[in-house]
Image (cartoon, rainbow, N blue to C red; front, side):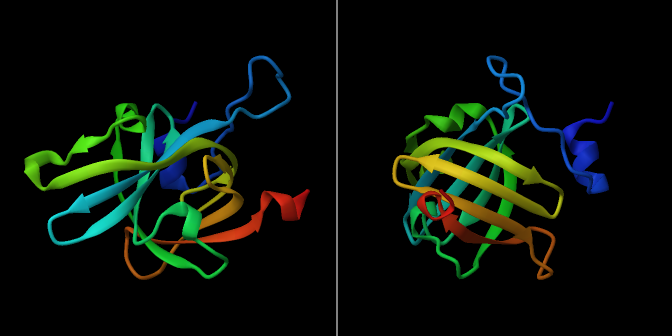
Amino acid sequence: MQTDNQNSREGSQEPQRRNRDEPGRLQELRFVVQHHLLADSHHWDLMFERGGVLATWRSPCPLSEISAAPVAIEQIGEHRLAYLTYEGPVSGDRGRVQIDERGEYLPLSRTAREWRLRVRGERTRAFFRLQKSSAGPADWLISKEATEDARA
């Protein structure tokens, strides 16, 4: 049996988690968008639950402001699930973290190079595509594919 890391390295599509109450239905996972307010800059971390950790990308704007035009984001290290609710100081007294939005997402597909998601947050209800960019090893693009209303 392959682990999530093996699937990512090999680029195969990762198995989806099933809802225990409705076996044929995929289970939604949690996400959070944290706003990092630093002394000389600010950014947002987009964090999506996956395999007991939060897969995380640094973004120049919150998820709610992302449109069909691709936005460059940087994949950074995985975070502990405790960050789903964390607000407070940034380590080293460099600034503060505030939760901008939280909710659930449904992974429609996830590979090492592309994620397609349905997001249902406090301010955002839409379908998104994250795709690996050729610019560098941690460089990705995110774009909104449609609002939930447009696909209904």
